[in-house]
Length: 414
Image (cartoon, rainbow, N blue to C red):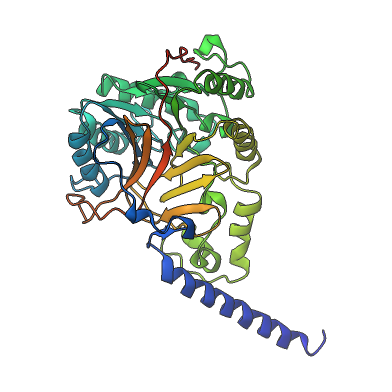
């Protein structure tokens, strides 16, 4: 071994430690603070027209599966206040990952009572609401993508529909979708079951399972047809998985995750592994687990979905999955991540993002009679959500007046 090699290794190690220290210092300067892109810095000076009436409101709440069970959950209390304000001309879309860690187990399973308890708390919050309630499923609801996940999904769907009559669980029967729902005049919701494309084991297809799609490509053809037929409408598309993200599922990791990778498995496992510890984030960024954008199944689904969506300007796509709030205005579309219903996690700033915030809360979309569509952030201002924090961001997404014409009947595929 050359005599200078140990010195080179020491120098490389010190440089690596210096780089991680620099990264950590930078992260501390912006973590948990709202980021707004330079192009949107004047957002606070823009407000909806006070003379315009709201036609419909939609709350997009994701990843509620770890809500507090003591009655002091900040997001549920914040949501309850919004429900009272919004009234019947509104909709709540619950964007999946409704029960952590593995959805709703079978009766008799040791985790069943706790899973029911967390789900019941959500259903109780929505029970007296006069608007429409729509549940989606996420990867955790499908037992984290394991081969028996379809059974978990069907159990949860049945439980929600039994204990909250009048709610919707979409797409039904675990089908890939798309399904449509008319929320208000010229406001159309389209729901996709994005977990279907990355799920292991049985996945429903065909009429025998209540689905119209017979293969993995057909839902994108159906989505194209729906969007073509409803160009006159303002369309909101909902799925669990984001199409853009500056957070973990988009390949962004903290310095802590590079230096102390074992904390991903146990919060107290602070074993320093600088250099070696970076292998895990690099793997997640380049290859990915099934829940990551880099994974081949996720990547294929995302590519096919974006190929359709980019043909229709001003579409809004809303997702959960990453535990933060993110908004991207990119290539004519509006892409949301509203996944901080019960947890928060690191989200990077910059890139394609217009707004990011590592904070509990959810997005609301407001449709006005004059055609304006506004995005707003709702975040708890105290530990139990009885106060609302000052608005961190809002944005006019569209000001296109909806034409007064007879609508083409919306397709409904499952």
